[in-house]
Each structure stands twice: as structure tokens, then as C-alpha cells.
Image (cartoon, rainbow, N blue to C red):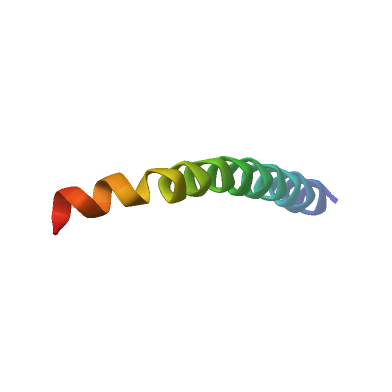
Length: 44
């Protein structure tokens, strides 16, 4: 029973991390997309 609770807790933590990282990744990618024209000018 302890093993089950442990795996459930780990699963919940993973899901929360995934949501947080995808939310952060979404805002980061939006920021990158908005900055892309300026960055493109630098690297070319």
C-alpha cells in the first residue's frame, strides 16, 4: 500500500511539474516569437 501511495504522489508531482513547465514554456515561446525578428537581425 505504501508503494501505491508513493507512486501516486510521484505521478501527481510529475503532472504538476508538467503543467508548470508547459505554462512557463508557453510564455517563453511567446516571448521568443515576439523577439524573433530582432534576434534574426543579429544572427544574419
